[in-house]
View 1: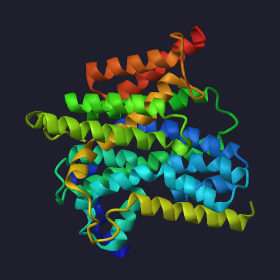
View 2: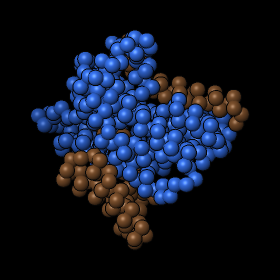
View 3: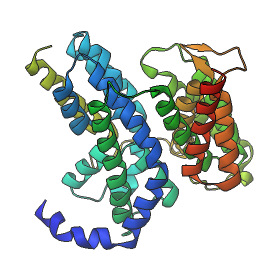
Length: 245
Length: 109
């Protein structure tokens, strides 16, 4: 860690650090809205405030935390809790394949650090900024800039949600703010006909498969979108171009 | 659950989160992945997003809504319009949420 502390000023003075932070700040309002909702959910479960705080700080996975709450509260067996968290996190396995070329050369402790911090939004902003899967020196400060904003807004807002759980009106408004943030991010990724079609197919698949347990409808939607995307790319190879996703 | 059990549960959740997020880059050796799949995966993050957003807008308690009097539809439409007009994320969030709040508080949609 000392080596990082020594290198830290150089990292946060780097222009790419600021750029990463700025591009994440655009959606920070949405992150914060979810953070508050997740914090309220944790505080209202039978976990108790102290455990809610511990969980928020160390797990840093909103979907995993919210999915595991009812199970932990009802005293479900540990393996059920873990299997649930594993299922809602399966999308990260897919993302990690795309992260690989950027980070695989780093020492293990930095790869573990990245693995802790690389939530959905870091991934989306990062691959939009660096669509070419090749390592370059600007990537490290860019990642840290976005990560500081993402992690910070998530933690501050979910601690706020835990603290104010019983005084917050209109929590549905907050969770919709989170949804619109995702909607905005989605639109940044639809750049051509193939991505529009893939998005439409994913939406239908996700709604149709909604009854599946453990949010497996997300995986069904990914599989359907990848299938239609590959098909379109092969039918019309000339139209295939590099998109920001 | 006892404190010890909770501690073990949370430690396991941390481990699972780390291992899924780092699945393909925590070990150096390359796992075999076919080329078409790597190419096709550029659609994966988009699909994951849409899969979270779409049910949030058009479903209630696991059922597709059958009414037009749902504030979320207009909130999402306002957010969409704002995004393609200004290409600005912050404004998109504010516009969508404002329309939702207005409709729900005035008309009860």
